[in-house]
Amino acid sequence: MIRNFIIIGMDDNREPFFPPEVLRYIREGKVFSGGLRHREIVEKLLPEGAEWISITVPLDNVFTQYENIFADFEKKASDASIVVFASGDPLFFGFANTVKRKLPDAKIRLYPAFNSLQTLAHRLVMPYDDMRTVSLTGRPWQELDKALIERAHKIGVLTDREHTPATIAARMLEYGYTDYTMYIGEHLGNPERERIRQLGLEEASEEVFEHPNNLLLYADTSYKSMQTPCTDLSEFRNHLTRPFGLPDEQCAHLDGRARMITKAPIRLLTLQVLELNRRRVFWDIGFCTGSVSIEARLQFPHLTIVSFEIRPEGEELMRINSRRFGAPGITALIGDFLQTDLEALPRPDAVFIGGHGGKLENILVRLKEVLQPNGCIVFNSVSESSKELFRQGVHAAGMTLHSSLRIIINNFNPIEIMKATI
Image 1: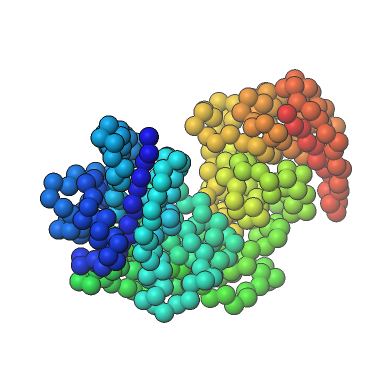
Image 2: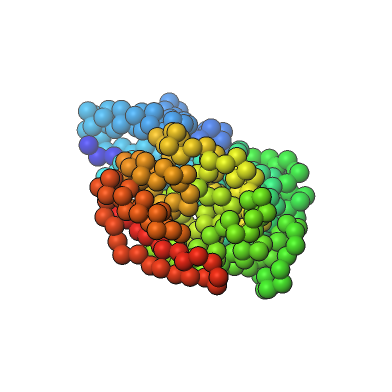
């Protein structure tokens, strides 16, 4: 079955301009598709008797209708196409990508318009060749968090009704990314309703914005040092650079006990042994202050991180420290790991065990059930007894124990960094 699509990009202008070739496709078309907003704009251009398929979720229903149309075309020996109207450039986080994913053999003829972020940059006369683009349209925060952690100085963001400019500004303020100015475009391309605003994050977090909208974030990129220790959270929020190795003394500690933390050199070496640069999902079991999770988030912001801690105090420590160091996006779960429902969580390919409560063997056996192929588990042993517990647990779980690394920091006890794989 031949599946032909003509996909036409457009903006929000109620009097759209289409080139003659596109107008011919519209004039000769039989079946059209697009969002409700697109239909409002182009309906007067459609031929009499035209069939319209609305693009609404769930998209599987839309593609079922497409398949029925193509089957009907085939019965009539017709090589007609479905004409689809889409926003901006349909290959820029757009509907053409969806067609290619769901119907990889489909033939697509594409007529793009400027995407909305290009249009906003044009209105601002702002060069955008160095802009980092992020879509939050029906997507989680991960890519925006990554761009912020990596200190991208110019970020273009596609929004939706949940990830609004106000919620984005509030999240940035919460995690200390205060050096950005926000430029918001509403109803771009609609001469009657288009509006562009430049706002600080505090102001933007309290505003109401009309949909559809998008935004550009532009940062002050002047260097700010973290060499002078900060004494409170407000001081941390004024620093744009991310540290390579969180300063131990600047973390909030469990009951004020400064020794209850994986020290910076050990943390960085542990992350190296975990090979997080090539991992996708990282679990931190027994996170305590959250230092290992936060270090991993800052150094490897592509990671999905899930952290577990049995002590209720851990929740507040993670909240304080993740915001203090600007590390959004860590999923922190409080409770006994062995009793936690893991079914809905992303399966890890790297795990660090920072605490085990004497149940190390049981934890390892359970991890073996969820660890992805070629995944690894790292444990920092502080005594011969815990070293032996890890060895026994690895054997019981049927995993492979690798050679370990022994290290001493100042006058602290020796640490043995141990690793197992499946």
